[in-house]
Length: 266
Image (cartoon, rainbow, N blue to C red):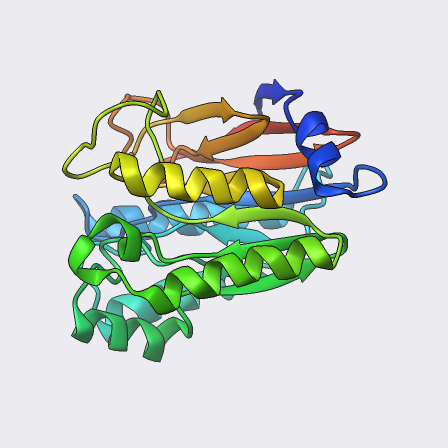
């Protein structure tokens, strides 16, 4: 496998904020926007299966401990399409976790019900060693009509619990919190509106989040704010910035977040 590497040293400062005694190690696969049916359902399905086979082969012995898919598993959610994603993903030799994307769930009650039937909860947490991964439904932030006090309260409590438990905190969502600049105006489709954005970012900072992984943009995003890394990976459906199909291996080691691009054949 041929890899392209990007690194950041911003985690070290963030770890100091969390109160963790020392940096812990974690390796995982970050995939996003498999989005079967975006252009060609069969081709995108096969390309995703090729990615699964590549992860399973792991010729470079990266030894990821899980895969996380940060949303838009399919373009049009139906029980059959969701089942296709699950069947393909079940071929993985490592655990995988899914994040709801706007195409999977949006703000529609019937889509949320279908998502729950197929994948389970649309926001939850899981632990991996000294890390806690907080999976969120960014549609509840992106679409004002969908916002709920219940979700906001759950999110802050999840952050507080993770910090109290001494965990290194990763947040996994779909929509970018911001695209390039924390002070940028709202984009009708992509980022979170400025007031909500700063509310979220201040919570990230308060509780010592070290990394946010997402999707949605169909472009590579690599930002840093207040020592927090924001990563959006390439995908296996289409990349609007003409980057090749693929996914990212993400590493956290010795106070540094790094990631490597893994290309996937057609």
